[in-house]
Length: 250
Ligand SMILES: Cc1cc2nc3c(=O)[nH]c(=O)nc-3n(C[C@H](O)[C@H](O)[C@H](O)COP(=O)(O)O)c2cc1C
Image 1 (cartoon, rainbow, N blue to C red):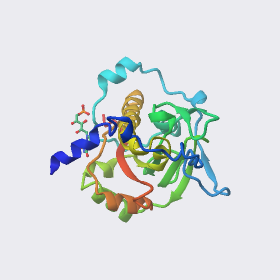
Image 2: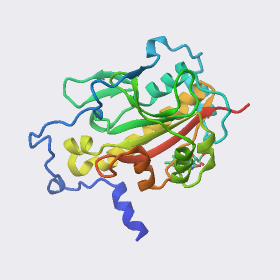
Image 3: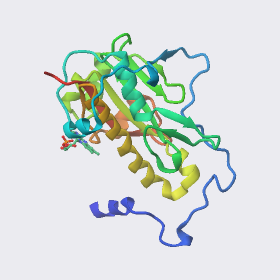
Image 4: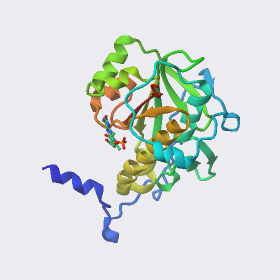
């Protein structure tokens, strides 16, 4: 029944008996704040938030102009612009002593951020094309692997053939690592994860408007194909949201 899905939009808690003891309450170790990576990995430096030089589009103007943009110019994003977009979607203001809580440019339920941000880079100045992952705590990029034309076609196919993906300068792909939020909120976690993802993509929309770029949220994708392209297991980490970005075509 289609309507069965409505349950998922609601809070599962109506009375104290509905509360499930969380792993945090059981005293289990907190999950890591972001997905680990090899200690000897060569990380890519980004422009830091203090050094952005991006003009001064007002928030009012960005809100006024925001729309889903599916046509992109052939030009590349500068490293400054790309760094700004990454910071806008997950940038860390402060890591709390109460691990795994952190405070970022976006809110998340309980201050526990369940997302990883993957980037398919096609055209960013000074960066080799490839699949990368943003490391919000370090504000750096981790290279995950190469992408070739065949891989990119698989990506378009996994986005259910939405051809505008092909023309983007960068594709943002968010996965969820649900245990981070489940550790604290048990059966209440999942609605919070879904709601939190909207904040992330809205920041991308507004940040794009501020730099003459555009994006379009994508939730119509093939789950298994996306997870397999990213090399995630589909159970403890899986794709939840996609957003191609490019400079606005004149
Ligand atoms: C959760 C969500 C999923 C969406 N998925 C897609 C999608 O898969 N493909 C697409 O072309 N647009 C997608 N959109 C964009 C909507 O179609 C768009 O926001 C809507 O038509 C309103 O246009 P506007 O964003 O320009 O105001 C999605 C938007 C949201 C918020």
